[in-house]
Image 1 (cartoon, helix red, strand yellow):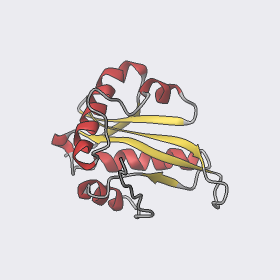
Image 2 (cartoon, helix red, strand yellow):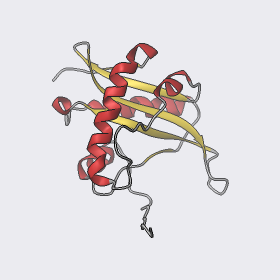
Image 3 (cartoon, one colour):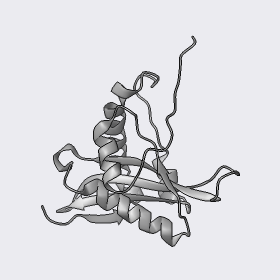
Image 4 (cartoon, helix red, strand yellow):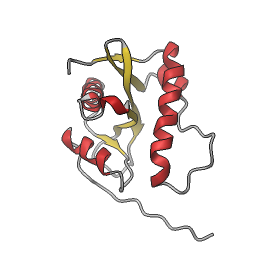
Length: 154
């Protein structure tokens, strides 16, 4: 398969981004019994597109949008050796293009953007049982770091 083009999302892309968001939510539902019933939304996509501290990217193949992701600069905990970090989210690849380098292209572009902003730490969260996503992130250099645990006492 040929090269993907990675570009910055604009407000004109909101419709497709909102569709991707619903695909992400649908894919994550089996991993999280605490999600509210539909309709729900994870992101304020318009705010992310307009924010100076965020970058929303799209991957295109032959002018078709096939993937997305964002980087958001956040303040780190005061006891860490870095003051800020980039949090990656909204990582989505169209089913037809999975395993073909879309996620890698987006992540690499977000890592470069982070470096350009002087950020040296990049983090993301993924459900522990989402083995395909974990493998995809490990392929681009991420390592497991912390396990968040929960219990419902209701």
